[in-house]
Each structure stands twice: as structure tokens, then as C-alpha cells.
Length: 114
Length: 111
Image 1: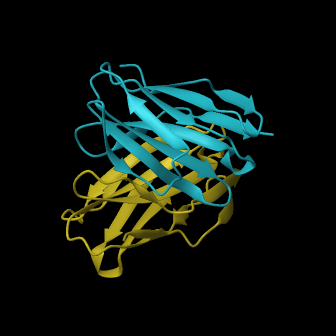
Image 2: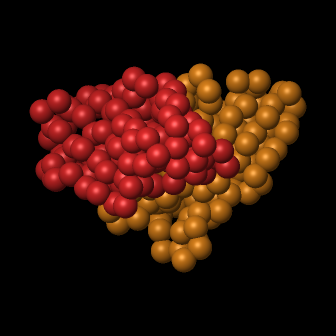
């Protein structure tokens, strides 16, 4: 069975600070996929990124960056120069190969204060 | 392309009633998954449909059922509603690269 742990339940930062959201996963599969989703107060889950298990290259997209390390089973998400609009609940998820569902962590609620 | 749409957005039902929720996936997507989100249990997988066939099911009682139509639209039904069924029900359609795109959800309140 797969499992995702997001140890940080809530984080509060002041605008323009950098913040890292932690994600640790467990899986016995050699091929798997990792995801980050953002859930703003409206409730819709917004897809942010997908990373394949065989691709450990880190990725940067604007103020967002992701650090994937198979050695520590972690897939952390950093927001640089946070903004109030970044306030949301962020979910990390894992999916095995094939017709399998997403398995989500419990989420981290990020509050960015102006 | 239009995103995933879900109707209704909000619903209030009484214990013992049944409810049907609807989801229209992104055009061209043939896979639809349903998830239940509650404060206590988080996001939990209900079932997945592909080409009108259920091909995956989560650990939920038989009161939760679903179906998919030939146009890929999907419905889920919950019979004999219980207070614990109050939740945000999210539908997702899957593209070719495993990522799932979610709709805005239906917030169900059971009183």
C-alpha cells in the first residue's frame, strides 16, 4: 500500500517569505507518480505538478519549485516570495502505475499574511 | 477546453434520503474518478469509471454507487444517507499523463 505523510498541518508566513512544504511518501512500487495539488477556499483541487519516479530532476515554475529525492522518499514544494494568493491547502499525492487511484496526504494549510 | 463541471454545487439532504451527483469531464477524457473529502478522513477514493465500466473501487459501503454514460459523463449515487456522508465530493477526469483534473466539487450536507 502507498502512503503520503505531510507532517506540517498548518504553516503561517509573512508575505514575501519563502516557505517549504514537506512531503514524504511510502511505496513498494518501482514506478510511481507524485503530484502536488492546491486547494483554495473555493474547494477545487488545482493540479500543480506531476513527477515520475524515474525522473529526479528538480523543477522550477515561476515562484514554485519542487525537490524530488528518492533516497529520502521526499517530494518537497517550495514557494519563493510568498503572496497572499498562495494561501490554500496543499496536498501531496502518489499514484502507482496502471489503473490505480491517487493516494493523498492529509494536506498542509498555508496562510500567507500581508 | 472547458474544465470539469459538477452539479449541483451544494446540496442539503435528510438522513435516509438518497442523492445523485453529476460530473462532466474535460472533453476527450474518458476516465472519471470520484473522491470524498471530509475533515477527519481527508481525501478518499470512491471509484473510477472508464468507457462506462467501473475499473476501480475504494473501500466504501454499497450505498455508494456510480455509473458512466457513453458521453463520459458520470453520476454517483448515495442511498440511505447518513450524517457521516456529509462531505465535499470531488470528481476528476484523467488525461493521458496520469494527472487528474478536478471539478469544483459538490458539498453535501446531511441533516
